[in-house]
Image 1 (spheres, rainbow over the protein chains, first blue to last red):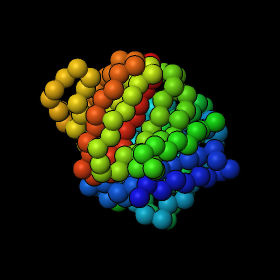
Image 2: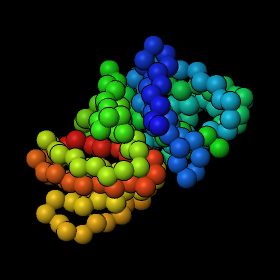
Image 3: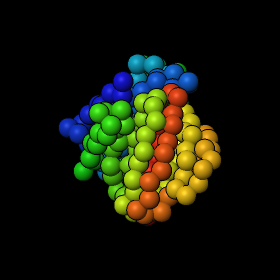
Length: 93
Length: 93
């Protein structure tokens, strides 16, 4: 089954599925600023657009473009800013 | 706005958005075999999983893995087989 998920009043939407790598989502964010929390380790890969991210325990923002990835440990919070609709792949593992 | 789309009784779902490149969708297909039709030129990029594809006017099936892409002209039909849940990016341009 492909799950459909909405967050932040529909400003972030994702589709959940299971790949050979484990659980994943592909999603899209509207332009805006978001704080996400993790319950498992996550690898985030920008599919189209770009994300400016403040990872846990850091003070600097870093921009990730299509094809670039970052990782977040379980039970952490991180901030994301996007200036245009941006698509991502999130792998939970 | 991020549109939510379902095809083939929910066996294919996608999220539509607009990037700097033009209109795009990210989507997921359940294992199965599908025939799609294009109304514009499409570039399909496998995000996770793999697709076996018969392009218009060809007789051979070819498998595309994550990161690989194929293109279809407007007003064509093409066949896709997937053996596991597979995520894709489709750029309309």
